[in-house]
Image (cartoon, rainbow, N blue to C red; front, side, top):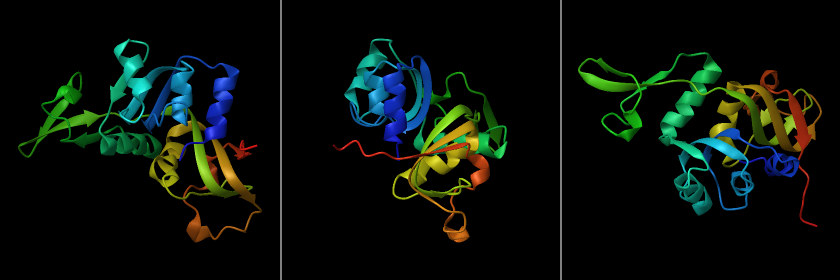
Amino acid sequence: GTPVNLVRELVERGVQNLTVICNDTGLQGDGIGMLISADAVGRLIVSHIGTNPETGKKMMEGKIQVELVPQGTLAERIRCAGSGLGGILTPTGVGTIVAEGKQELQLNGKKYLLEEPLHADVALIKAWKADRRGNLVYRKSARNFNPLMAMAAHTVIVEVEEILEVGEIDPNEVMTPGIFVDFLTRSVSTDG
């Protein structure tokens, strides 16, 4: 689900001190892991970092500030931003380190944390195919967070495998309408 070519371009341009919102940091040197290896990330909002030991090492050294967010909560915070909501109430994290610094509310005898929306200035999205108006179709793991993030960002740049003419995608297949997309770029193979 990661737009590898767009991430590689950020690394090549030497971008620094990014705040990155993502599910995980992938593997060392691959996907978001390329940004970690290049010391391009200053702050990370993520559900886990376990698959990339370099991220954990940099967090322990104080080189990256990491906010760990339970995966479902992460998805809902992004969805809230895209939907214009002020946040969500979740029991996940009540009474744990996750609750530190967050508002706790009680409704009908049950405790909840108020989790605020996660907006982004720019979203780098990976899609399988798009038409020239930016209507997107995803496949595999790209379906998990990319549709949500496309709605939660001010500017959306999509790396797409195939760009089709308007009308070539069945409207029932569209997962992100083109109204959310600002720029399309075609995936380029880097395998020789």
